[in-house]
Image 1 (cartoon, rainbow, N blue to C red):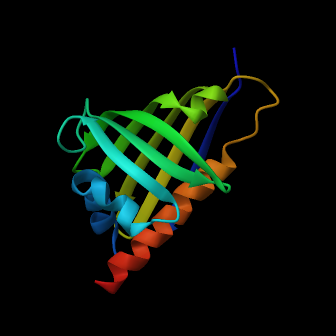
Image 2 (cartoon, rainbow, N blue to C red):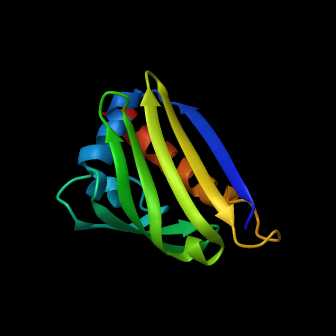
Length: 147
């Protein structure tokens, strides 16, 4: 069995957590336009919007390298402003047995939680992936504040 881990990062959002949640819940297809240096492509394969059972894929930049992942949306809670994404295919699964991402927004805070299990003890913590998520978050926040 691999080594399990969890990383959590919270950012204060000048635009408010509700606006940020709305981007990921109903306008996810706009993320590549909002953060083009970090997100190259987004596609919904199953489902029309982000809802439980939807399957989506991303091409994104991480540490200067283009990466790919496909995710199953496991849960969406509009009252708690949270979405749970399970990686089902892609580059991350070469290093991790599983990789789950949860985003939640409360008042002025956006929180990203990454849960994973390394395939080997030598696998690095996914700090570069979390860094890419935070860079994307900053880009989106900057554009939402300008509105």
